[in-house]
View (spheres, one colour):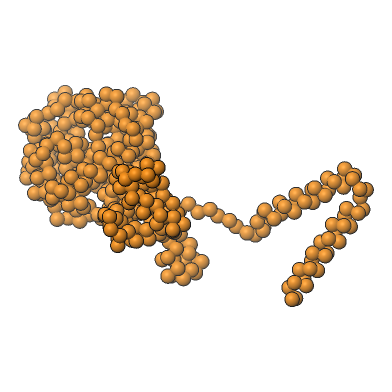
Length: 456
């Protein structure tokens, strides 16, 4: 009752105040009308403005920061655990599904206060389709867990959604090879050593007139790369530049095996990768020089024996997307949706490799920047690189000195493309890349360290 009487009193005072202002002016006078309108607009503006000492922030951060802020606000610990998954919103595309599976997912998302997009065909007939789910991490998780107990193949759908959502949020991944377990938190730097005479970047160690490798000079070069901050050395004997010719296994072995042996002798603990798609070369490299990783630009498609070598010696493997072959890949490459098609390709190759006994934890994925892509394709892949985190494997990016950077910055000489290379590395790290393959070790190391200082 007291509150109501105070409210009535304040209303009456307001009426009297307005009456005293308007009654002192001639009826219908311009000044009176203007001041009346001004008073109304000022009052409306005052209602829209926050109080002078009120601070309003719109946060665009990661979940670690949201947790820190909630702890600072002294939110109950159990409440933080409940609310944290509500701070991230995702759009998840899943398929192929049967139309009735898509409809079940949609109805569940609607019941959780979210939604899903399905084909209109799926409303009237049974067909194969895909579905886009919109929701917070918590909504997606609740929906996926509810599908575990449903029939019609929905438990498999549940596992796929949970794995993808979990992988897209992970900041560290595990890579295994040769009975080693490597936790990748801070991104790794893979240095390039081309044992070629026709590398597009002009840095092949066979580019000199003599074409003879000085072992002492080779060791000094690798030592400098290590000193500059290299984590992994990638050694390749066959150029994969556009239009390059294929080498025989014999010729490639003649180039890379002496180099690998010399390096391994001086650097017994260095992680070494061999850039090859030939099983014979990979097998000799592991037997002669105990290499750790096979970087296969064909994603195990060019040599059917390669999966056997990788499984036998417990090697890690890079599965890279490439449209066509190095000789043909840049002849008018086309995609309906480059990100969707590259993602689907890598997803299928991961499954294919697992079916042949290669452990999931031994796999690295590479969207293949510059391999059968235009400038626009490369740009779109880099803009949406975070989508590939849902594959659950470390993402390797190789943009260093590539021609699309030269076209954008109008730099014909690959050695003048450092600025573009570093920018693309930084953007890739921001989008979830965990390994970068580069020519310029020291400046890239500084980019990685600076990124880690700010964001990790």
